[in-house]
Length: 235
Image (cartoon, rainbow, N blue to C red):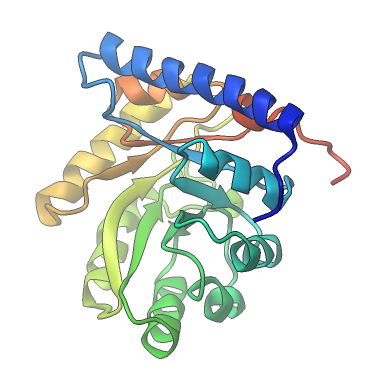
């Protein structure tokens, strides 16, 4: 591992402490254990050196949303991290993603699930954990399965021998109050668990709405801006 820049390490350490406290405080406010929600650091557009620093500070789970960038980082970061793929995924990228991702959070179609299953059988020793991405408002053009399609998709994942259904993921629509959106997701998650008891993961909440997500049962929160800073829109 290369020498870590002291200034950037200090910056990330301070941000990480603030984010961890926000998560713990949100859990306590919701009457949950302070460690009930896991931080997934979203490192898209940031260099592998930042991932190295976060790992050295105790972060264990990171997320990326573009295959080319994620694959390059995973190839050079040696820390034992759990890699989440969180972006919309084309089926032709499945062969690449399964070689480094531990979790794919954005499964939203039968065909994508099948592609990931086939690739995992060929290229992985262990099953791939997947979450069903839920379209809260039904606009599936932005990614996510419609709520009505979740049971059938979950059943299909259950037939895929190299996939393991972990739960659900969603992004609150911009024109919805986060609390309302995450209430909907919590209901979807509850109904999913009735048929798939091991599907306990609820990945919800980002820098601007993690408190609302944790209050409604999020087990994982995906934090980028509050942790790493504002992204350069040209990157």
